[in-house]
Amino acid sequence: MDSNLRKKAKRRNVMKHTLSLLVIICCFASTAAAQQEPEYQRVIEVEASSQDIYSAIRQYLAETMRSSQHVIQVDDPEAGIVTGNFILNMPVGNRLKRNLDTRLTATFEARDGRFRYTARGFLLYLPGITDADYHELSEKIVAKIPDELDVYTEEVAAYISGWRKSASDDW
Image (cartoon, rainbow, N blue to C red; front, top):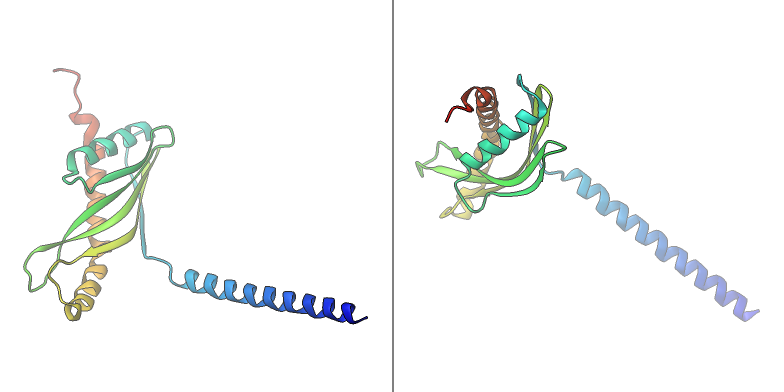
């Protein structure tokens, strides 16, 4: 009979530990969900096939990548998807009087007549900034990111629209 009581006590302890573990996991999961990283997403219509849009995006990236830190991670011509790590050089009104780099992960998805641009994982690069100035500047920069990405996506759309016109077989 003594062993039955020990078994019951052991089962209760296991159940208590399991329940405690579940509560802890739920707390971490809700905290992680509440701290979602910012994301920018935009769909732009262009008059081109998905294959032409994909090819134009690849060509645009090849022409505009200026650093080895620009790395394409996913390149799927059949799905029309290009994902990579890029640097957005942003003009920021600050006492440094220079542009600041914002690193991000971007995805281009091509469909007939449109493409979707998604950016996330923003990492501000502020060399020579003190901790006191970092918070103030980072807030200003983050507030400007959507406007800068709007300009960027419009540039990509203009490039795509003119891409077929500039491609010539007469060479």
